[in-house]
Amino acid sequence: MEFRNMGSSGLKLSALSLGAWITYGGQVGEDAATECMSAAYEAGVNFFDNAEGYDDGNAERVMGKVIKRQGWKRSDLVISTKIFWGGKGVNDRGLSRKHIMEAIDASLKRLDMDYVDLVFCHRPDYHTPIEETVRAMNTLIAQGKAFYWGTSEWSAEEIMAACGVARREHLIPPQMEQPEYNLFRRERVEVEYARLYKEIGLGTTIWSPLASGLLTGKYNNGAPEGSRLSLNGYGWLRGMVLGENAQERIDKVKALEPIAKELGCTLAQLALAWCLKNPNVSTVITGATTGDQVKENMKSLGVVEGLTDDVMEQIEGVFHNKPTPPPDWR
Image 1 (cartoon, rainbow, N blue to C red):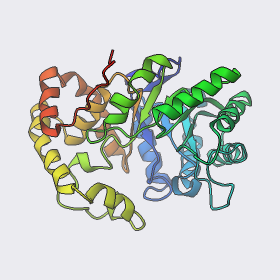
Image 2 (spheres, rainbow, N blue to C red; image 1 turned 120 degrees about the vertical axis):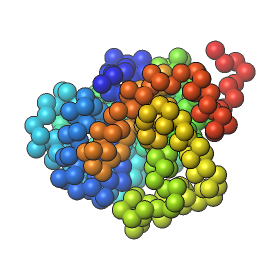
Image 3 (cartoon, one colour; image 1 turned 90 degrees about the vertical axis):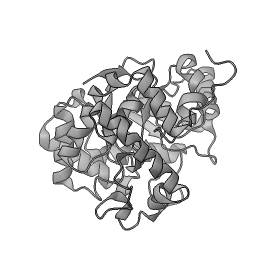
């Protein structure tokens, strides 16, 4: 396993990590989660991602039970949770001080842990002043309930605003961002955040590297039974993946097949390796429903060295979506 610093921090994350989004507590039960997490742990993964909103907190319960059952040393793990969607009550959502303080306690109880290593603001909250959120996150860290805090799907402007408050008030600034990043979604990570990597030492824990499975090729002929897109209640995800311009995206995935074949890897491994190629990616969060799937994903680490400049140009030739850098690009 390769380990990377999380931005300018001293924390080291496995280049590939495992997330619980949608699966744990819903699509994946405790036994299957144990299989997936064990396969990841044995491969050297140390970062496991979660959120209070994943299956109404059940994903945290499942992950906590697996870790306790396996008897893994807590200091060997980097565990995260994300705060925003905590329930239906008027104060159970967002990034108010009240919700943040109550949410972290609830998450720790579900995880059966004394602390998480990383806590994210799962989305920006336009109804709460950023200063209130920054102060609450600083309190969590001061209380030892988290070691680092960051954001997820915040704009560069919002992240810099939070950093500005922290610097002015001598508080701890956000250290990491969790954005979507894959061959179809590139602008934010490659351009919008470009200056933040050096200016504030931003780390990135990217999600959806396979574009919700589209880049694996399994949706080339629709949504197969048992896949995420076939689950009840996930029509919104099916619409995102197989909605407007779906055929155009599928055609691009099919055009990747000769490149993957030449490299001797699967489409999924190629897509994951492409994300790993970006030096500003601290870790690539993968998802899986079986241990074998985890093991296959881990093989993408060996594909990265095959992504030469020529191969990267071939991939660019398929997607034609390389973002234009800003004029003051360094």
